[in-house]
Image 1 (cartoon, one colour):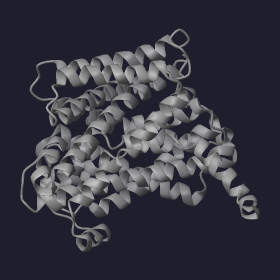
Image 2 (cartoon, helix red, strand yellow):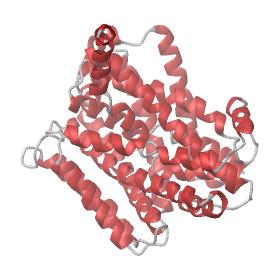
Image 3 (cartoon, helix red, strand yellow):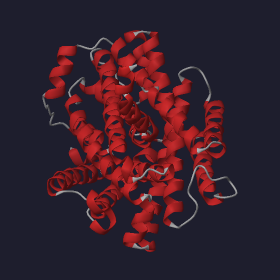
Image 4 (spheres, one colour):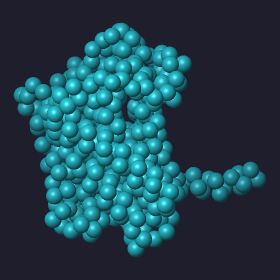
Length: 419
């Protein structure tokens, strides 16, 4: 009994942490969407363990940017779009949001493509899977409240462990894994350089800052919750990149050593069957399905948050359809358009994915610079502004991200740039 009483302060802190946790973990995990999983699958299949060391650096960059977003959210109680409008005016905000909506729509299309591809592995036609998932994610948001929606999203985050299990079943060479994780390697060839840039450049997307900050505001977190929300962000960033690492391991230990060509996560899931066992293949496919459904719900939600905050419309999941018609209208429109494109008789959706990547690359530098200006505004942030050392680290990280992201845009627009 005495021990139980002694643990009371720790139990209280744990309960506070559990009450706050959500926005950081959810946002970071959606970063491993259908496009991200395909990127990591190709990285492992083509270059083995060589790109593992990159994940350490991308994790640090992800933590720095997402922590800054979380701090803005808990201190101001406002979404990023709201703050950008106050800082830059309505016209610039409208231009930024126009690019964001187009990029998010293209990304939503790619998520429904992931839904179709993952269930085609199990013999389910896209004409069945895509409409069912579209209706399912629409009902989740329009008929649920913030707490119930967040619980579903946290469960979806946990399902990413399927990739960890799949990676372990592939039986990687752990000595090589450890060596590759701490030893930077680089190949001066166009394919490797392009993948190198893509792995970094797709780590942080503009929608992430909008969604995380909006969900923090929607949840009602305050400055007193900052310490716990920071833990939420750090755990989410580390978890998502550990998952990414195991995706690389699964493909490196099987597909790479057997010199098999793959282009997508669907190819990787199918190839794993005869190499690592049927269950590894099934888990990989289920992971792709989970990631695609998860992201198909989050990206339209992020878009609805951003647009409605910027123009002063109601932007809460807890609000009803009558209270927030524009919010739910935008959410519905994004899902309908994203799903409809996949059902059209088109041969390839690659261009839509490349276009979304380019739009993200154009928008990200603007968002990161504005966020740094906001987080250094003492009138806005008070004691939560960046310190000198943190500013040096953050500006350096942001400068590198901007350079690599713009390089990614150029290589996307001009594929022959790297030779």
